[in-house]
Image 1: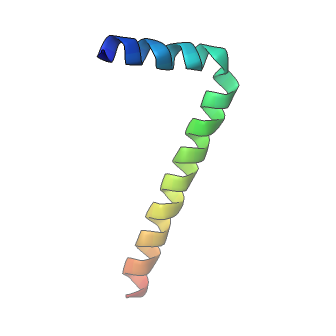
Image 2: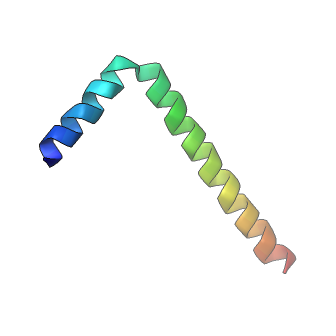
Image 3: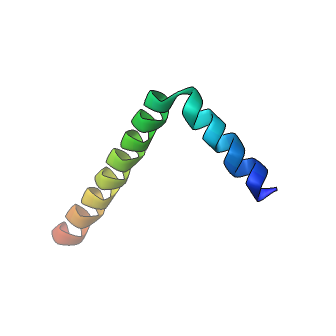
Length: 45
């Protein structure tokens, strides 16, 4: 089952490499934004 899942995601990635890359970048930016907000809250408090 895991093999099928990984194969499916692989197929999706090959279908739209640019889309996957942009999605990864977006997720990374969101994570950085959340971390930055947490740091600001900690510093302000």
